[in-house]
Length: 466
Image (cartoon, rainbow, N blue to C red; front, side):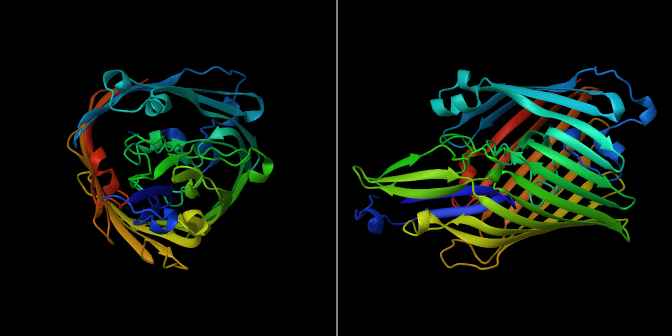
């Protein structure tokens, strides 16, 4: 039996599951038995709050700004057998900004990481070490240009269109670092895009146009890592080869663009968007080679996608209601039968989520979410039901001025499949905090979370912000 499970970015990233129960027809053989980063936040109240611009009379030619950022150390131990140290990572994040003539401003940040786990253990193959032991890159690098009621932002930037707890729905633009799955804070998981963005600000209306000439895609890691989105059990006498992700050529025909409009009406914050892009998350295309040893060749590929979405939110006093919906046109989905079109078919998918959030008198935050995926033209070849549903619960309790506890629970309703993330944060000094928590996965091996059951871990983080 060969089991392939893969993940995409809508609704916990996509629910692609491919189970190959028999290779008889294919080979004619018998198988053998934080705190969120302020750069990520988006507000449409005003250009000043969105871009951090001061009043015009405070603009100057001074292009120097103090450097801010953080240093963070993360340690994790995976406890299912074989138990092993799975992370000993250090992160340095630096950011600076300044003002130019005519009200323009700029922002530059970079991030470097080093994971000493590969010096402490031989658990991982060399390809995993090469992928994530040491790397550095430009995080954000953009220029803001005001022009009356329009603001332009040019460069590498975060573009956040959705804000749900622990899940991605309308947040379709940002690429994501999926090498730790969703078991990390959003200021760590989001990857900026090189983009040109124009925004118009009216009294109660905000519109946005984005153009991404060269896409940045999700980083899914490499086979052998804890959260690689491909679980493989090849049968006897059948070889398996997993290629590197195949990205479209970097020409303007593969650029992406999107339009988004939002307005405030009767207390309702409503937005709608259209996004034409190359999917940031790959689909696993399957080929077979009979030249010598029977071989399955798996190639992650990024394909064209069209997305229509809407969000809404309203404050009802005791609670806040939020909802997001995204219609994905002609999305490639893996199927069970390898003999059909490289093991994939195209489907139209509607993802939607409804959330209720309440803060109690003692500053306890409670968030409940129901989400569902509807395969609108459901094909019997799919391994999913026509409707795939799930719920999540998030709670944050302020125990005192320096100590808080959090709990995130997410579970699928169609099958046994769940994730739990308890965490305690102690801010023991003005610029320091330490965290202790766990990322626990359970359920069926073919589930979104259950397939990572053997990657469940306990961890601690220490951060200094300056």
